[in-house]
Image (tube, rainbow, N blue to C red; front, side):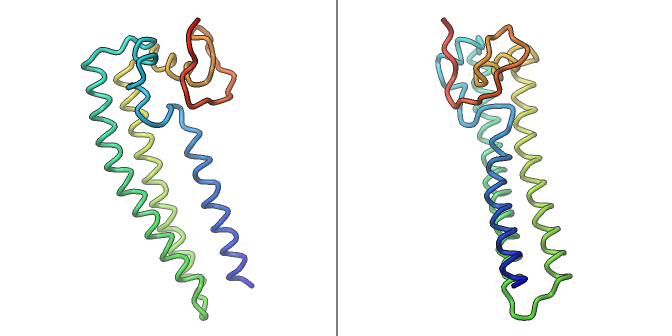
Length: 153
C-alpha cells in the first residue's frame, strides 16, 4: 500500500514538473531564428550568433542534467519497489533526486540570464511581451502564453 502511494506521488511530480518548466520567462526553442522576432527585436547577426552559442551550450547542459534527473528517479523507484522498504534510503534518494532537479532548474535559469544579458532590459521585456501577446509598450502581458510570436500590425 505504501509503495502504491509513493508511486502515485512520484507520478504526480513527474506530471507537474513539465508544467513548472513551461512557466519560464522566455519561449522555448530557437525563437531568434524566427524572422518576425528578429525584426521586432532588431537583432544583429552578432547577437544571433551569441544566442546560437548560448543555446548549444545550454542544450548540452540540459541533456546531461535531464539524464541525471532520470537516473536519480530510477534509483528512487527501485528503492520504493523493493519488498523490504527502507524509508531512510528512500528519503535520502529523494533528496538526491531533488538536488538534481534543482541543478536542472539552475541550468534553465542560467540560459535565461544569458538571453537577458544579450538582449538588454528593453528588448528582453519586448521578447516576453511578444510571446505573452501584449503590446510592446505594455508593462504586462495578458499572461496567456502562446508558442508563436504575436504579429505586429
